[in-house]
Length: 333
Image (cartoon, rainbow, N blue to C red; front, side, top):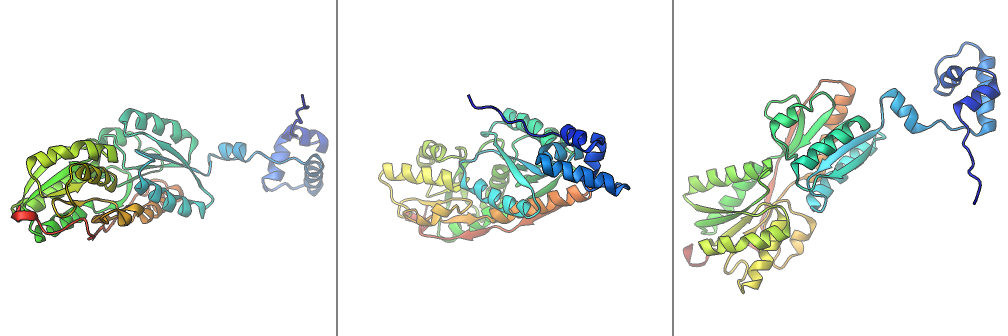
């Protein structure tokens, strides 16, 4: 077995320089030491011993870790990957790195991860958090940003997208194509974004005198695949999915049933993930600027790190991208 080489410690440097460990710490951290001879001896001893201070230890002692804790509900969803890319690029420019955890769409797991990450990180970013507001209210002591979530007047910064306006565009687009009965593949019941999209769907449909049937799906392609038959049984002519992954599952189920898109049923998604434009047919969806949401989340968190107690909110625009998966309603349905 090879011998383990022991790294020199601050005690070794202090002994070699014949000074206290406190003096070594002051010299190596750039703090003022009046005696130039002491500075010379410490620097010489550190160089001879090849001593390197522990970045982790210094960070913890100073109360700064240069880490941002990030909790997401589903790492497999490309829209969260895009947000993380923007957040990582922006935070990296200021020397911060991300510590990312997946709550797997479970509130209990999300709660546990928050409590585990908070003491290890300078601040937290909660991506589309599923926790109720009363739980979020207990987290306001430290730097915190929520993305795509209404924070109900809490002292929490937020960055997100106007999902309500995006869904309104979808409904108007389908109505202009003659669709009178829409089906919605709903997202997770704990998702604020899903509630916001359902609210917009209901308001726009009522204004245009359209029928809406809702089927609870989830956030994955498997969820969309499983829930779609409920909408087909209701006789809808267009299906609006909570996100693009759910839409992809719905598209697969339609093909299994021998139905064409958009000839028999039109289909829309939400997010505009990279694969959406390459589906057959290319998917009509709502483009969300997820990378920019990530960058804005860092800007809000950095503001809190610089000025404790200062909070803000950013709401970015969503945009309908009409592609070949939507067409004229068959038979005026």
